[in-house]
Image 1: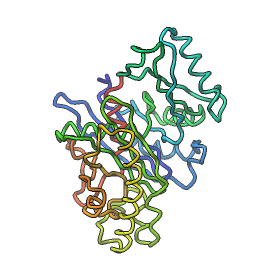
Image 2 (image 1 turned 90 degrees about the horizontal axis):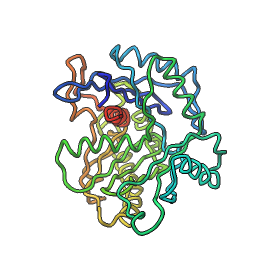
Image 3 (image 1 turned 90 degrees about the vertical axis):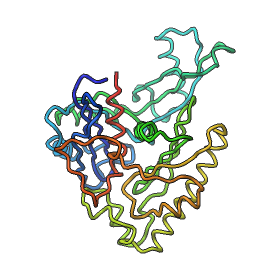
Length: 344
C-alpha cells in the first residue's frame, strides 16, 4: 500500500482533464475528491504531445480542488500512444542483456528510433514456455519520450508527484476488478469506454494477457445537435441527461451501431479466448444518454451494466454526489487512483 494518505488518478483527455483522489482509511478506501476541467481545442495533437501551457493551467485548477496532501499521482496514457508487443527472450540472459535484447527487438519494428522511446517490460507470468524451451515471453511497452516527459513536467510544475504511468485500458481493468470482487460476480466481464471519437473495448481473462481493441466509433457519430451536446465531456450536470433528452431515433441508431461494432470485437475475443466466454459488459464514458441498455443487452445477449466508478467506494462527508448526475466519465481516473493505491 502507498505511504501517502491519498492516491490521485489523472485522466488527460482531448476535451477535459479528470482527477479522482482516494483516501486510505482504516476501514478501506474513501472517495476524497474528484474534479473535471475542460480543455481548449487541440491541447493534445495526433502525436500525443501536449500544449504544456494550456495543460498546466488546467492542472493548477485541478490541484486547487483536491485535498492539500493529494500529491501522488497515477497518470494515464492513451493506448494508441503506446507500442505493445510480445517478444521471446533467452531464459539465461542477465538484466543488462535483457534490456539490450528488448531495445534490439523494438529497433527492428518501431516507427521511432529506440533512443526516442521510454521502455517497460516484464516476463509474462504463468507462462510455461520456459519449461519446454529455452525462451520466455516478455511483454514490452514503449512510448515516445516526449509524450511522457511533457505530461510529467506539467504535473511537477503544478505541484503533483507522478509515481505511476499506466495505460488507460489497464486503468479500466483495475476498476472492473474492483467492481467484480465487490459485487461477487461470476463469469468474464468486459469494459466498454465510450468516448467522443473512439470506444475502448477490453477484457482481462484469467491467466492470460489483457485483450484490448480501440474502435473508431464514438458519440460524435450522432448527427443531431441535441445528441452532440450530450457528448461534450464537461462537468455540467446537463451534459449527462436522460435518454428522453435525445431523439429516440438517434438513441436507437447509436445503440444499434455500438452493438454492431462490439459484436465484431466480441467474436474476435471469443475466437482467441474460447475458455473465457463473456458473461457481460460494463459501460462507462460520458454517453449514457445515447445508449439504451435493454436494447444493447438484447442485441448482444450479454448482461449490460453501467459502471458508476463511485458506486462501490465509500464517500467522504466532504464530497457531494448529485443524484441527477452521472459520473461514468470518471472511470479511467478512478481506475488510475486504484492503481496508485497498489503501487509498490
